[in-house]
Structures are given as C-alpha cells and as structure tokens.
Amino acid sequence: MIHELDAYCSAFLYTHIDTEGTMTGFPIAKAQELAGLTKKQVIVAGGIRSRAEVDELDAIGVDAVVGMAIYTGALQ
Image 1: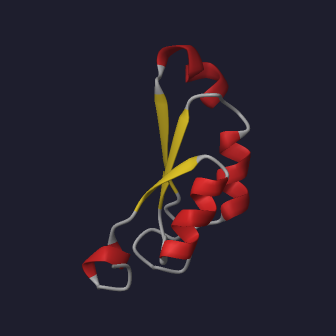
Image 2: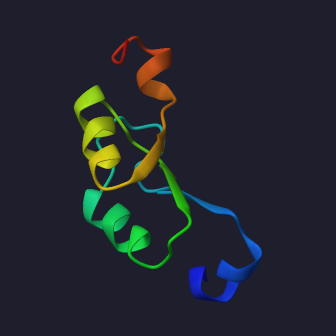
C-alpha cells in the first residue's frame, strides 16, 4: 500500500498487531523493509520494549511509538 499511497501521504504509521501490547519486541527487519519503500517518515508501533530498541529503530531512520513499556515503567 505504501506505493499506492506515497503521493498522498506525508508519513506512514505501521502497527505490528501481532506484538502490540506484548512488549516482546518489534520486528526490526519489518521496519527496515517499510523504510526502504518510501522516502517519507515511517513510524512503527507494536511490542517496543526498550530504549535500545528505540535507538535501533532510530539508527535506521524509523520513528517509534511506545505505549505499554512506558505505562509499565519498563522504559523510563
């Protein structure tokens, strides 16, 4: 869908529903794949559990939405 919508969007938000709310980690390979499909901002969510993971996503140019890890105090 990114190819179809790229001309109409300024950014893309992808939620990995298989890991959403689980704090089991976001599949970094999926983030890399999505970032490779567009020059627009890519934001991912779903399972992010640590600052190290946020840093890893940042290193590949992908922004993160963190929820449960903040709510539970795992990410401060």
